[in-house]
Amino acid sequence: MNKHTDNAAVIFLCDSSDSLMHPFDKKQIVFTGALSTMTRSEAAKKVQAFGGTMQGAVTQETDFVILGDKRRGISTKQLKAEQLISHGLDIQIIPEADFLWLISMHKE
Figure 1: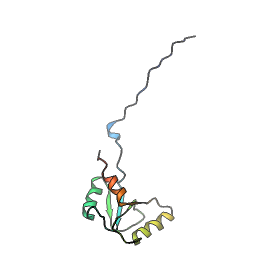
Figure 2: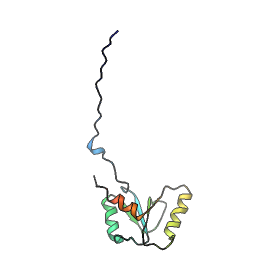
Figure 3: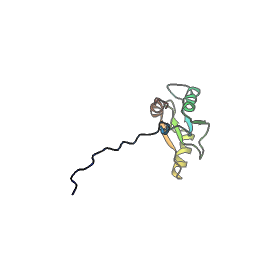
Figure 4: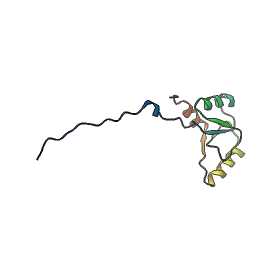
């Protein structure tokens, strides 16, 4: 019996082209309510910088609904998103603070 064992470690290296994609990449984003930290135009530019597209209304193609901190109650956009979610669509409703965190990620 051979008591010698091979303890060589196997290391897998990732191809640099396989970098992680930003959550907004190729996603449709809708804002509802005024943002407290920037204008909608500034927010749209940030979304586009990460590969996302702004929408004016919630549709079946919407991926994210961003709730601005300066909104008053539940908007019709939020209600529409909640209705579509209840029908099985994958729409993420996130507050402005989470949006700010997501756009703070470095673009790869």
